[in-house]
Structures are given as structure tokens and as C-alpha cells.
Length: 574
Image (tube, rainbow, N blue to C red):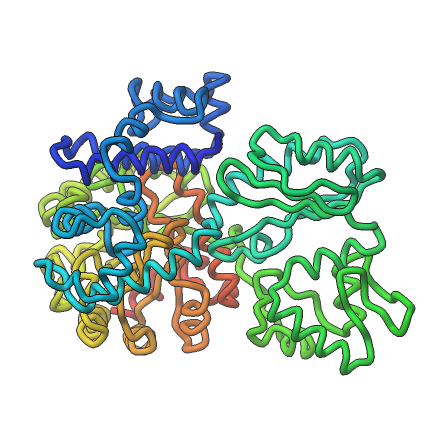
């Protein structure tokens, strides 16, 4: 029972309690917080139940009751409370609630008004124009629902990268103990660090294929065995993730790894280039006529093609082949390059750990600086602060800084961009901040023109330094709001404002295409975790993955700078 599955059970309980109505808002929030804690837990919750380490009831937002429920899920594979709630509420409502932009409240409203309790009926009603008769809905929302349902059908076979990683990591560790196993690598979109992944391809070499295949299908988390053989086996895990095992000859390992890493567009382009060079390239090797001239390693494959080795993150046919041929590939940024984290939350707003705890965790990670960015007052659900609250926090920062060695705490806030583009805090408190981070948390349904004006106006504010999660998306839950990103990027460049790559696995906002756009326009970016607890600081690697997919080098990411140079960069933008 992996962490993402346990987290999904708790999230489903919260959603069903909300749509049921009458449930205590704090109880709903407790289940949402528990889902987030389990999702970001560095260790396996299942292992914690079995070994007692870490103690689940001592984790932020868990306690004895929820720890007991985790134990129930691990031992029985389900949660009695969730099963009871499902019996009280039509099953299809849960799928409706998960649609981006719908959520529990609108799903409940539609169900109450039209009796709709499944996606097919919702799709039909939206296409027939029946939803616009409900107060609070309209033609725009109807069209979004139709698109969301279509997108949901496509996404149903895909998993967020972090969720897949939580499942695949233990599986590979288990597989490495197979007798005779020599090399193992996960390929596909997982290796390219795409934000969502479909099927997982695991490539291995081994002295004998049989023992590896036997161990592969015997993994305890396997729900269904689709195929088992000496060269290929396939299973479906309890999470719904399909995993394929491919046992390849040592002489073809590099070629197979290259081929199954993809992407399809990249592979097609390279095969076309191979034909031009009178070569043939496939999963077995690079061939000149009938003679294999490369295939044992990826490096040999690229060398045979007269190309520099291309990092997997770049293999999307976006110019990387020409860059590899001409020696112009970027030296991609790495996690080790990051000097500080510029968005995180504490118990002063909706974070789950204290300022002291977050600071100690950042120091332990070797950071030179961190920005404390609790919410401003407009985000009431997150316990946003008034100016007096921030001033109280800044006094605590001053006290902590006196006894904290090696880490500088930057005074900041995640300031809400109001619907007219104004900021949620006045000039006096903004002037007291080291770095001003702004973002949108409301009225996501504004028109493209209005949302663009709103964000550009905020970016043009002379005290703004960073625009956080610029498109507002939640992967699989909420589509990006309509906004002209070219106009936002231009405003950021003209005003010296940094654009954030939010590393939260459900955000990864900016996406890789917009990261590339910003970089090409000369805009500096930052990678921040938006951490609400210590464990989420480890999400930094997902943000760096996104930066790498957008071709970012160290110099493109502002928080790779030493503190003094970072402060100079901020001064230029104000």
C-alpha cells in the first residue's frame, strides 16, 4: 500500500464529507492535511505501520485517530469510513468532484438541481446547455466541463511523476535483489522526468531472464499479471500503474535504453537523421548495413550518430538534435546548484511546522538563504495575515537570525493579487520585505484578457520580485486559468520580475514549455518548493526537473546565486 494510494483515500474522504454537507469544516481540513502529510512523507507509511518508525501519530496533522486509520488501510487495503461514505453518496459524484474547476460544491449543486451523478450524464447535460440554467454556472463553465471530461478520459491512464516515483522506487529496489540481475534502469517519460507518466518501462540485463521475470511478477503490490516471458513481462500494480519489464542483451542495452526512453517525436527525428547518414537505428543497436556498430551504451549510440549525448529531459524534438550536432546543448541546472528556497509556509498561516523547524531543515539542506512566505489576508482559508501579523513574524525572524548560523532568513510573504491587479498588502509592509512574492488564488474563471491585465498590473508593481505559480494549475484537478503567457513573460522581462517554477508535484507551474519560453525571452526564473511542512522541501528536485526540461542552465535560475548576488538581482528589479 503505497503513500499516494493512502493519500488519495484521505482526500476522497474529505471530498465526500464536503459534498455530503453538515460535516465539521475542521474535520474535512484534517483529512486534507493528512493526505498531504502522507503524500510528502519521505518514508513508506506502510513500513511505518509495520516497524513503528517513524511514529505516525507524531507526524504533523496525523495524531492517534488518523494514525489508526492509516494502520487500517495498510492492513485491510481499505478504509471503513470511506466505504460508508461511498454507500451514502452516488459513486459517480466522486469522479465529478475530481474534474478540474468543478470540485465538491459545484458537483453537489449540479446533483441537487439536475440529479446528475456521473460523468456521462454531466457531459450530455453540458453539451445540451442545461447547466447554464443553474445559478452560478454559465456557458463558459459548461464548455470547460465538456473539455475537462474529455481531458479526464485521456489522463485516466496517466499518473503524476511524484506518485509514480513513490511506487516505482520500491519496486526497482525489490527487483535489484533478483538472482543474476546485472543492470536496471527505468526508461520512458519517467526517465525524461515528464510531469505525468503512463506505463513504466524497466530495462534490465541479467545472466538468466527467468529468475528476474519470476521476481518481477511476484512483487506483493502486483494486482494483475498481463504477460510473463523471457524478454518481456507486464503487470498492473494496485495503484493502477502498468509496469513492463524488458530483459535485453548486454550488447543492445544502450540502444534499448535510448529507444524506450523516447520521446516518440525525438526517436522519429533521430531515425530520419540516421537514414540521411545511411545508418539504421532501433532498440537493438545502430547498424551500418548488416553490421552493428553501436548499442552497448547510450554514449556509443550517440557517438555513432555523431551527436553529443543528450540528457533525457531534452529528448522532445525541440531542437536538441541540432544542438547536439553543433555542440550547443545547455549545461543543465542541478539540485546541487540551488542555494535557497524562496517559497514556504509556516504555522503562522497554513503551514504545518514552525518557523524554527523550517529554518533548521533549510540549514540542514545546506541552503544559504530561505524566504518565509506566509499568505496575505485575502486567502482566509489559509489563515492569511494582516500587516500586523507579518510584523510580528518579522520580529521572530530577527530573534531567530541572531542564533542561526549559516542561513539567512529573508522576510517575505505570498501576497495575493486581487481581481483588479492590486496587491493584498499596503506599501508600508511591502517596503519592509526582503522579497515580495505575488500570486493568484481567486476568481480563476476570469476572461483571458481580464486575467492577463490583472497579472501584468501586479508584475508591474515596483516592489514585486517574484510571480509564483503563474498559471494556477493543479495537475489533474484544475486547468490553468486563461492568460496570455507571452504578455506575462514580456512584462516580467521588462520589469525584472522573476517567474517561479513551483516544485509542488500537483503544480509544476510553470510547465516546461513556458519555462523554455521565459528562458528564451531572457527572463530569470526561480525554483521554489511552496513547502507547507519540512518533508516538502525535498520537492525541490521536481522543480529542477521542470527547469531542466525547459533547457535551463544554472545562470537561468536566480536562486543558484550566492546571497549577495541574489540581493543585487532583487535590487535591480525594484
